[in-house]
Every structure is written in structure tokens, then in C-alpha cells.
Length: 413
Image (cartoon, rainbow, N blue to C red; front, side):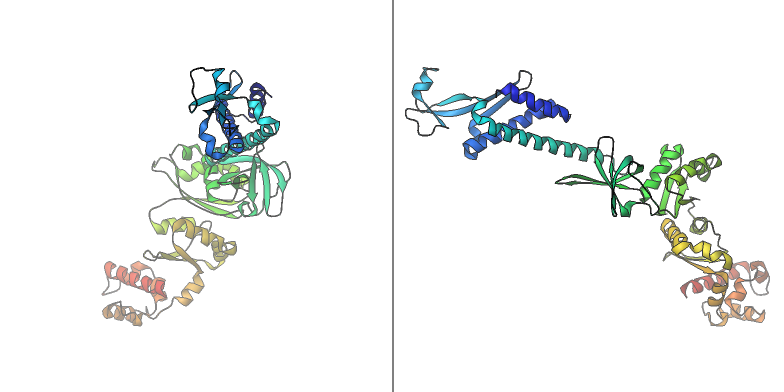
């Protein structure tokens, strides 16, 4: 088997895998160095050099041999008599550069080399796939269902690359059949011995962000910014949006004409309800908006904790909390405030405190309130502020201070 046949065989194998010729040259050199190491020993590897010419189909292997009068090692020495036939100037003890015929390695070693090459090509393929998909992390990707198991779905792309969609990365109401197209984001790529493990996700917050970027050009262009996202996949999501351009209706742009943009995203997420919230730097406004579709009748904030009590009409409480607390949890996630949702009747019942014991309120003001039949915190909070301000001995500033002290006290209960 001459070197041209070897190179042609290797080249054909590499061509099928789309391998670069220069890289193939390096692999062939590495392959034959491994053959030399097996035949001559690792300690003699530095005495050899290899030149691969892909254009001419030649593999040249050179070995440094010691010139001796009597050979004691056939592999590493050459006799002076043999060398004199080629170079009459050389002497015993000098080094002669001998050319090794590739065929001396034998077919068995050549086959071993071919297996080594196949392994190297496979390694290159794995690395290429890893690098390709690692650059696509957090990007939308489409693949097709190949095999369905209880805890995961095996997908493949047009290049037959295997991609995993684990159960925990699926939307709970996802239903797929073999051959179905599946879209998600590349969540992670891990390099393993068997090859890269590529994880697709459909329930990540980032997937929803990417869908908005895809459907709403103003987000992609930076005119509208997504400030916060929180999802309960398959149930409800909340997306807080903002535009520094006051002429832009951030919420309207995300919804689209007749809801076209948002409906496209909802369909992709199997009917997941999406609340789009206009961002505000004032927490009370942001929280009220985020609690949509319910609207609190009162909202009490403790910005230091941060904590909020949202009070709803009795009939609205269930919707405000959401299934399994979803609406309150999502609102907490996008606002950063721990939120307790309570009914108005429950709040009034629990939050009725005798004003006479609130020593934080000056005694002269407590006395004025008592004289006017305002005996409890509920009495005070249920009255119009203007009516309280009109009471003799009270003013707008003092009433505002009393209200603040009452609300702070109630928040701490």
C-alpha cells in the first residue's frame, strides 16, 4: 500500500466529514507518529520527522540512524558498508538520514492508523458541533422530534445533530409526536466524552424574551426595553416593558395591531396568558399594574423590607391571587416586593386597632379624634381625608402624619 493510496483513502474519509485539508495533514502526521512510537518506542520518537504532501499524495518519513560497523539494533542503526554505497564521505559514528518506506509499517498498522484517523475526525466533529451550538446559547432554535421518552424528548436538526428537550424544560401542556417541529432556546451546551449534550428549553424566561424580540421590532431595535420577565410556563407570564421615548406606547407596540404580535407568542406557548406591564419607577404604580387583571382598592408599602399588602374587593381576591398563587408570585418576581393579597373585609377585621393605644400619635391629636368619634384605625382610614382635615385642631400636615403612622403600624402587625 503506497502513500498515495493511503492519502486518497484518508482524504475521501475527511471529505465526507467536511474536514479542512490542512487539519487532515496534521492528523496524518500525528497518525504516523503514533505508528512510529509503537514500532520504535517513545524514547526514539525525536529521531523521526514526517512530511505530508497532500497535493502530490506523498508521505515522507525520515529517520536518524547511527552509522556502525556491526549492527546490534536493526531499527536504529545502519551499517557503514550499506551507507558507503550511497554516501562515500560518511564515517562510523555519524548520523545518517534514512527514508522509511510507508509499506514497512504493514497493513495491520495502517488499518490501526485509519481507525485512529476516524477517531480524530469524530473528535473534530464533536468539537465543531460544540463550538457551533455554544455560540447559540440563549438563541431560538428549531429542531424535529426524533424519539419520545417519558423524561425527555430526543430532537434532531437538519444536520442530524442530537438535541435534548428534558421534561423539566418543557411547557406542562406540550404534546409532541415523532416528526413534529419544536422551537425553543438553546439553554446549555456541555462537552462530554460521548459528544456535546445540547439542551433545548421551552419554559425558560429567556425564551419568552427572545419571542418578544422576534415579534416586536422595536425591542430588537432598542426602542423598547424589557425590564423584567417572570413565567409560570403554560399558565401565565408577566413582562415589564419600558421606552424612554414618550411618543412610544410600549405596551401597545408589544400587543400589536388587533393583538397580532402578542397572539403569535401566546400560540407558540400553548395559550399561556401574558400580562404586559408598563414600567414605573414608583413601586405603588408598578405593583398595581403588575397585579393585573385585578386592581387593588388599597396598597400599603414598606419600602425598606420591601413588602406590600394589596387589598382587594372580596369578589376579586381569588383572581388577584391566581391559581396556586400564580398572580401574586409573578408580581413579586417582577417588582421585587413580597406581596400579601387580602380581601377588604379580612383586612378591615384584622387591621382595626384602637387609636388610643397608638402612642406614636401625639396625645392631643388622639384626643381630637376621640372627641369626633374616630376611635379606631378603620374609622380613620374609611373617612375622607378632607373631612378629617376640617376638624378643629387638625391640619393637612398633621392628618398626613397621623395617616402615615397608622399605615406603618398596620404594616408591622
